Image (cartoon, rainbow, N blue to C red; front, side):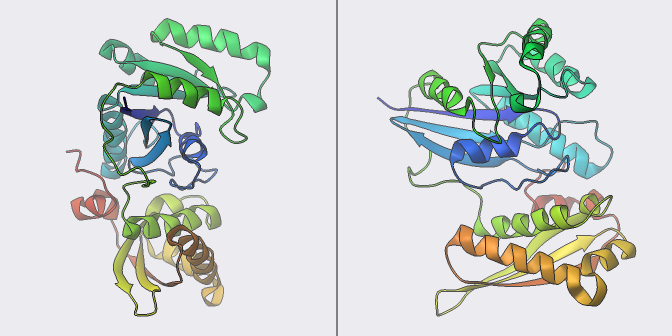
Length: 296
């Protein structure tokens, strides 16, 4: 008898969804930064535990959208939740019941879909505060189970995985057992570059940027050449990304190249280009290129 099912990780921006996905999958599949709204589309992690295939879906943080990009991100998050066998509402226990968390919970409640409450970052808050927070959230949504974890250090994550392993529906595996994700290498490369943009730039620059892999060329020696374009909304953002004498873009490229080489387990020749493209975050083609559907 085998089991297989989708588990959606939903929550407000910066709740730690991507960190939890990477922790449970045992591999870095989703990019992570301290900044909110880093994840822009659904990322699938494929985890085998005994006779169960757990399909972990990391979704963008749910927030009040303004741009077409924002609306597409939020739509992707809700689609991930609707398609799941179990939804994990991941809450930053330190931040508590914020307006964003309340709005998510209130939207989840009428669906009657299976939902579990997962309080994250418990290593950063006082334990006596956790039970009142659990009670407040349980008044909004009927949760099957509640878990208290730290995705950063792994506390409680094994218990969560054990429970998921035994609760998913019986059925055949949907993906090969040795796959870790369904993301194509081209998208992994672009996301790795975007992660470095988030880590190495500040203020509006990361949010005014999108990254696309233009070409992915296999070489006879087994290495690969990857040409990546970073689109920015304004000229000032382009100047910041390039840096004095090209110092910033060189640093982004060097860090990203090392990470992509590790992910693909091969030598990578990475070439970056920065282009100004005002209004890219309202373009249907740009959204499709990063794995999002047009929300309008």
